[in-house]
Image (tube, rainbow, N blue to C red; front, side):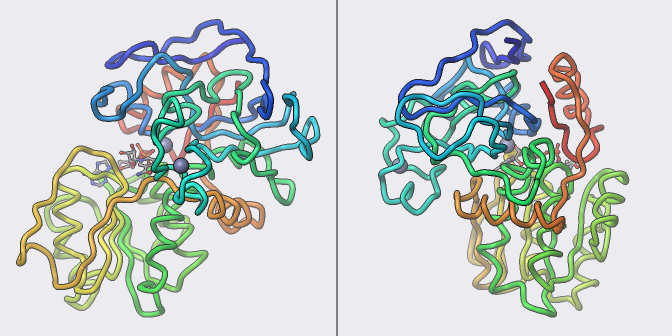
Length: 348
Ligand code: NAD
Ligand code: ZN
Ligand code: ZN
């Protein structure tokens, strides 16, 4: 089969031939229907090393996957061949207290998996190939309500990651509240939809690109603010001087973290999702009183089921463009130039 593989750090992936894996006991072989291209893959190509992550290449890219059950290993029951499924992408040990809560990205037993904090497409072979081996049936959720794998794939990361970040802030998103979404690309434009579908907050979208702000407006954002000088003042003015109850930074670079700190409200949440390499100084006077600052990484398995439900009911619908495997390297170059619209999904 063909597979898009990252062979070493600080390189582009290569499209190469790979063996179709055979599912061992308890494992499932998927025929891939769609594999989303995430900006984190660009960090894998340009920014990260094994020192940061604790694992590394070679592996097949694609950590945002959905497809059909193609073959099952010994002992797998209850999954018929041809069943459409989404892949829960973070593969922890399955047994520690975090894994039992369903938040496998926070697995506390790193020795139990070849790629702690990762999974298929992040240290282990992922879905940018015709077939993908899934190590355990608990990583699979059958697609509800006729949801198509191409539509479902982005929900497993571009949907699940903002959903988790927003869900934990729900108590602060009452009617009358404001949420700011910084960076309305692949994750952020889905974040706008999730805010609209699950809260009554007013949504302010911030991006450097007009096209991204247009997509945010299409999905119901109430105010579009160009990133840069003047953005903080505009958001402060729009919130009666108070600032925003929840600020979600899907970029994580120095200027966006500074903006986030400048517009978060007292007792608000400032959540850093983007891995843009920035830092935020924390001191008694640098952020409003009782503002909570956190990073979030991906989400839980039960939250993925909730996101798929939103997708199946048409309440959350990532803006997707599809490409073949042979176009994937070009897709990442376009993403690097900041010229992608919504989420790109590779259809092998
Ligand atoms: P993307 O390239 O699709 O979107 C990024 C958006 O940010 C683009 O619209 C871009 O124009 C905008 N942007 C860039 N610089 C900006 C600035 N200074 N101000 C405002 N907007 C700006 O990327 P994506 O796939 O949505 O990923 C976003 C980030 O989230 C990446 O760093 C990625 O690695 C990270 N990520 C984190 C998690 C997690 O669990 N924490 C999961 C997936 C992705
Ligand atoms: Zn990702
Ligand atoms: Zn674990």
